[in-house]
Image (cartoon, rainbow over all chains, first blue to last red; front, side, top):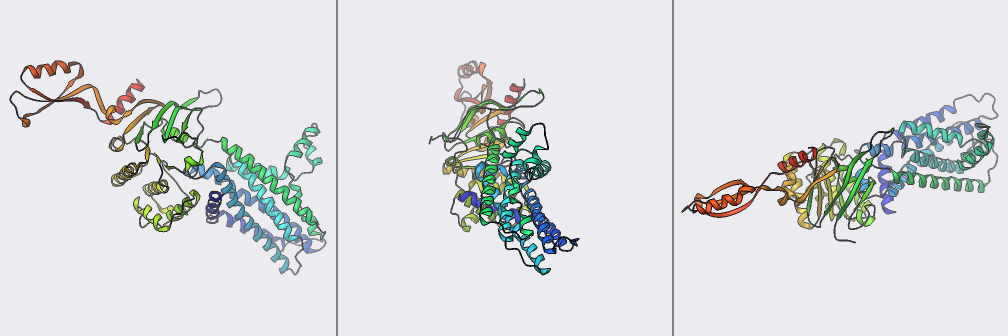
Amino acid sequence: MRTTLAFAGMTLRSLLRRRTIYGILIVILLALSGIGQVPSFGVEGESTFIVDFGLFGLEIGAMLLAIGLASNIYPRDREQRTAMPLLAVPLSRGQYLGGRFLGAALVQAAALLLSVLGLMAILAIHGYAVPGDLVPAAFLLVVEGWFLLAVVFFFSFWTSPPLNAPLTLLLFIVSQMSVLQFVSLVPTAPGLMRTLRLILPHMDVFRIKDPIAHDFAVPDVYFLLAAFYGLAYTAFMLSVALAVFRTRDLK
Amino acid sequence: MEDRPLDVSELTKTYRRSFGMKSHHAVDSVSFRVAPGEILGFLGPNGAGKTTTIKCILGLLRPTSGSASLWGLRPADPRVRARIGYVPENPDYEDSFTPMEFLRLFASMRGLDAGDAGLRRLLARVGLQGWESSRIRGFSKGMRQRLSLALALQSAPDLLIMDEPTGGLDPIARKEFRDIMLEERARGAAIFLSSHLLSEVETVCDRAVILSRGRKVREGALSDLLANEDRHRIVHLPPGGSSEDRIEETVDSSGLQDRIDAIRQSGGRILEVRPAFRSLEEVFLSAMGGDRG
C-alpha cells in the first residue's frame, strides 16, 4: 500500500504541474459564471435555473476532467517509455494502476469541489441561499467523477486517447438512459437490450439535480446507496481495467 | 530462493501479425544463465532481439513460450523486484521533476529509508553533482542515462540489468559507467549488459552471449570466444639465442605440430604455444556472417 500511495503522490504532483487541469477548471468556472448571466426566460425562480444548469454543467465537467486527466496518462507513459523503469522495478501493474488512479482521483475531486464552491459563490452573488442538499450532491458528483475516471483508465489500456473520449462519452450517454429508452435503440431485441442495460452502469442514480433545484428533500439513505453503488462500480471497472492491463505487452 | 540471479530457458517471443501475414519471431528459443558476481555481455546488431529479451526478463512482455526466472522466481515476484536494478535504453522521465524528487519517490516506492545526504552521494557517484535540484526537462540524453543509473543503483541491487546503458554517453562518461559496473561486480552484484559497443563488452564482461535475428549464435567465456581455434601463436628462441631474441609467430592449427618439430630440429627452444586471440569484433562479425550465410 505504501508503494501505491507513494506513486499516487508522484501522479498527483505530476498532474498538478501540467496545464490540462487548470484549463479544464477555467472552462468549468467560466461556464458556471455564464449560467448566472443567462436570463431564466420565465423558469420558476432564477436560483432553480442556476442550480439545475450548474449541476448539469458540473456533471459534464466531471466527464471532461476524467478524460482530460486520465486518457493520456498510460499512452504517454508507454510512448515516452516512462512506464518501463517504473513497471520493471518498483511497481507491479496493480500498484501502477492504483497509484495513477488515486492521484488522478484526488486532483479530480479537488477540481470538482472547487467548482461546486464556484457554483455556491454564484448563488450567493445573486443573493440566493445554497440548497441544503448541494453538499452531499457534490460528494455524489465526486463519486460519479471517479467512476468516469475508472472508465477512462479502462479504455486507455486498449485504445488511443482520441478514441477514448468518444467511447467515454458514449458510455456516459448510454448509462444515463432509462431501460425503455435503451430498449428503443434496438426494439427488435428487447430481451437482449434489457439484459445489457442491467449490466451497463446506471449513472442516472447520480442525476439528482432536479429534486435539488426544485427544493425536494433527498433522503440521506439515497446519497449513501448511490455513493456505494458508484464506488462499487468504480472498483469493478478498475478490476476489469487491471485484468486488461495485465495482458498488455509493453513493447 | 535459488542462488542463480537469472535463468533464461528456451525463451521465445513471437509477434503475430494480422491479415495472414507471417508471424515474426523476435526471440527464438534463447537460453542462457547469469551467475552471481559475473558480468554477462549480451551482444547483437539492431533488431537482434536484445531489448525484447530484456523486457521478457523484466516481465514487461509475456514470452510466447519458454521462461525467464530470477533466483528461481517469476519476474513479477516482489522479492525479485527488490533485488534488481534496471537501466533502460533511452530512458525518459517525468520532466517536471528533479533528480532528488525522483530518487526520493523511488526510495519511497521501494520502501527504502534514504536520507537526502545518501541520495546526494548517489547522484555524485553517477556524475550528477550540482544538478540535484534541476528539472529533468533540461537534461541531455547522457544526463538522463546517469539518472537512470542512479535509480538502478539506489537499492544496491544483486542483479543489474542494463540495456545499452552507454549509448548516449561521451568516452569519459562511458569510462565512468564501466568503472561503476566493475565496482558493482566487486560488491558481488551480477550484471546483465546488453550492448552493441564491442569494446565495452570486451573490457568489462566475463562471458558473452551473441544474438542474431532472435537466435543465440554464440555463448561462452570471453577468453574462450576470443581464442582462435584455427590459429596458434608460438613464442620461441632461435638456436643459441637469448630472451631478447625471442620470436613470435602465428601459424594455422593444422600445421602447428610440424612447425614445432621444425623449430626443435633446428635447435630452437619453444617458450610458449597458445591459441591466437581475435578481437571481439572479429568474433562478432564471424558470428553474424555465419548466421546470415
